[in-house]
Image 1 (tube, rainbow over the protein chains, first blue to last red):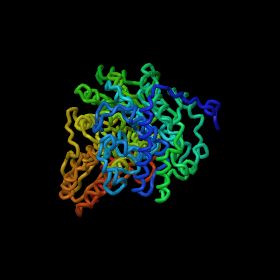
Image 2 (tube, rainbow over the protein chains, first blue to last red):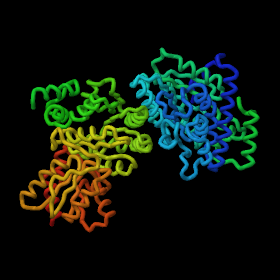
Image 3 (tube, chains in turn green, cyan):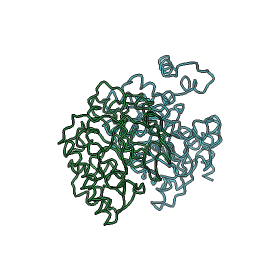
Image 4 (spheres, each protein chain N blue to C red):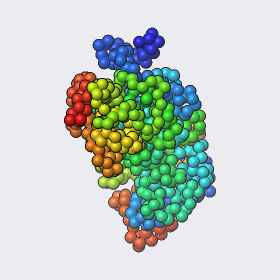
Length: 297
Length: 338
């Protein structure tokens, strides 16, 4: 079921203040995320390709345009924070953290192996650069609320970015956090919903519908935006605008319309790819498609 | 009660009409000697420069945090009735360098937010302080949903989570202050604030250390939390009757004081644990594990709530029914001695 609002979503317009070099760089970083995801899952022999692919541009934009970070210093106290409710997409984030020199790149090569800190879900205790552990869907927005309130209490200007899955909207705790963040005016809490439309058992709308999604968040007193989650220019422009908006008192919810498995044609059309493993010939085909960029945008 | 204390209690009470005949009225006005200790300890921590923050889930009058909230509103977070959100948010707060103290009924903390405690607080080794109040059967006729007779077993099996069950307000305050910089999470299991005071206000607390009240050759009682007060009376009566009965207070349930247990086992060869908890997995379980691991021939009797849902009644009636008052503990001890 959809409302009038959600049937014709107001997509935030692409602003022209993102220069072409930035766009090219962010697109290249998103490709890096996808290729590394393929490589790491190749080591584990099973993983969440499609979940990481739908979030690739969001990861790239946050870590290479939006967030305030310091190379090689994962514990820098003034850094912006990133939490993921859909922790199963962490395979797409780990290569970025290594790229920021938060841990040696060789650690990636032992992905999921016994004794290696990198598993399917992120562990803040053992992976430098992970700001909050996850794996049980539904906790992260509350964690982000704590980060937002804690940094504000200490007089710091820090944003907490929380990536949520759209299936995650079915968890009750998300709405506890939504209510609580608006009540406490957590203006430095920015939720990004990866609205790729699929969960493990099928289409989100078939399993347990969540629309009208934007209207729900607006009703919870959040500042709601919708954006094409694969358009790095639109994402970067929106996130810059959100960061610059000092008058806002409410938390921000960005609904990023995405495609599960984005970038690999046979994943985009087959929801079974939420969790899977590519045979070698399929992996070659996926890499070729990604490098050609045919399916992107 | 002094005028000053009375005025403070009135200030901490919930606004609006309260029947003098109600449990709530009695809790805040007459028999709640332990209620103010939580807030006062946290106020002291702020005074001493510790970066703490407190929160609750719609229970600021039940746990007395209303006093802290009035003194330090900038350090207090009201989460409403959203316990899971509160515990995960406390983990988030802890990642920013703060020490969050979040309080709600022990039954809700241990059961409703168990996974948030395990995954967000303990797995991540964050210094969150979880205050489970009104533990055991102390919520009386509010019933099984509000009774916490499984919390010690659940919390004890979570790695890197310390479990402390103070006997009274002063020991809670001492435990809070002694552990303020502990780098990992702590579950504090406390009563309802009406529990009698045992220890003086300047009592000492050392994490992981038992307090030996009496040594005995025939039997040693090992107790924790609110059971200390009636156990002291019971052991006093037994000793007055000429029986050599010892008594150990075990406020740190995890990590447990193995030496104290094994020393008592070597001396009396007969141990009796007393707890306001299911006999499975709590203090009695912890002591049994120590005895078994050490291969000691000592015999252990576990006294507590049997493995069944607790009945509904006013708390004092329940303590009598389950033989967890002084007379009941004395009777169980005599039965154990044979």
